[in-house]
Length: 362
Ligand code: ATP
Image 1 (cartoon, protein in one colour):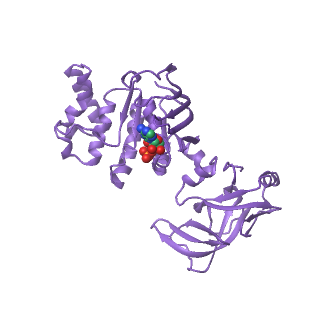
Image 2: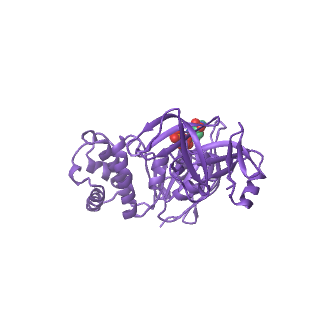
Image 3: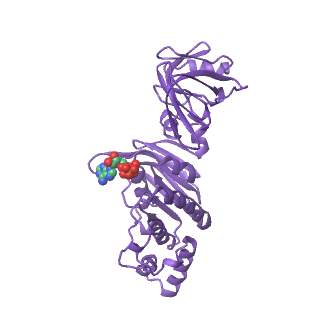
């Protein structure tokens, strides 16, 4: 059992740099939480404050209702897995796994029992007598995970644990970590800059930018209802198409004068959007249909510029007015370069943001 509560946490480094601002978050028991955001947004700093490796400048951190700001990393009941595996190269896998328990004075029978338990969970039974240099990257990462699991802690912290692995190993380890999490059931906080990793692994995601939380939500909430332009652009690949403009009557008119007709769009919503002087309309490349839609939709033509064939999908890039955009579609879609390409986007897939505050309107 471990619930975490972060209340108004700030981090100001000794040089005066403010890395994290007013971080508030309740983490439920057994939750798999992912901190995601671009480099330098404060993810690792926050994780390290939770671990006790970095002082909390302001605010409170509670684990199971107990204030732990002044507790050492050991006293917090937390295990951390780093990007670098930090394995002892001269020790066997067995000894690497056993090391922490030996330091704590566990007897060898108990250690053997726990090593067997974690090596079974992680599929390391065959490698216990090997040294780290004779293991693959994925196997080393599993040993690193094992060193945390063996401690039977309530909270796991993982800082970009998969970034040293190649693409295939990463995908495999993602699902392994999730399976282990289900089996072991500890509260886990995982840091990554990779939105796909975040979307595929997390119960809830915390999106960060410049030290501020942008949104906390399930992968679905972030995808379907991004709170602001940053989250809308960060989640999704290729990113959401954006158009700057404003509502004029029943139209959305871009800054360069291109008109998207919104007749039939919910009148009340439209007038709410119209209250904002500078509006950004967005829709996802994958929400562009190349077939006729029977639901209310914008029906547009773009001029095709380039295309990207990915095998299972086709990205078609083009211009609409003076705006660049991309449609994500199936690989058999017919198109011609420099010609018009028709697509439709159901109104329900349109997103509207205030350009000045960057916040979502609808
Ligand atoms: P990355 O994905 O690159 O690891 P991050 O989101 O984890 O990035 P942090 O490592 O938390 O970011 O760093 C947040 C900000 O704090 C960065 O601008 C970084 O340069 C700064 N920072 C980190 N450590 C220190 C330090 N010891 N002293 C001063 N500034 C620091």
